[in-house]
Length: 226
Ligand SMILES: NC(=O)CC[C@H](N)C(=O)O
Image 1: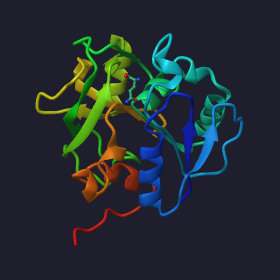
Image 2: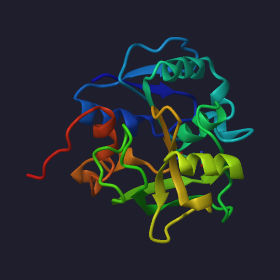
Image 3: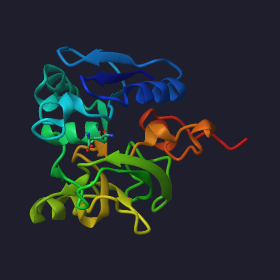
Image 4: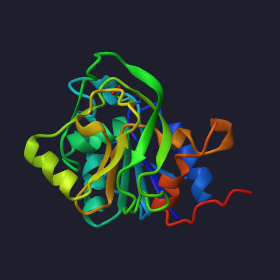
């Protein structure tokens, strides 16, 4: 199982993503830089979180126009799995690989806390190791996580099962419409989510609820409790 992590100036969760993918897949991911025009053959490409280009203009807007994003789009068009976490989600939206927009949190404040997520669609390549409707823990840390889509887009993504994660139990931290925390593209191979599953993958993190996402994407069976 081979993975790649996209690096851009201002990202700060890249080490967390590299550590998580190394731990789960058993090998370190290859890293690709913003100016790279080719991405090696891998099973999963991850765009980590952070503050690419200082969040100037709009979160993810400048990153989305870097050459490496064209390479990500080419791979996605060929069916390679892509996951964008937090700023990575914002970048995928800005690049047009996922629908909708991520606006300023309704509180106008940066939120850094743990939320509860409902697995709204467990029938995806990224969530098959979770149970439908399962509630998992996940940390969030962002100021622009307020997902919005126009009525037609919202009806489409809701109708097609493209809403994969929702904030549960009144924990919506940002005002996202329909409590949307993560969505998938129509083809089912590009996922974006605001919470950070890479920060809950081992006991030292205080829990492993985020592991299922990477294990699902890498085609692994869930770790059985010892
Ligand atoms: N942790 C992150 O990736 C933060 C994303 C973005 N900079 C925001 O604050 O919304």
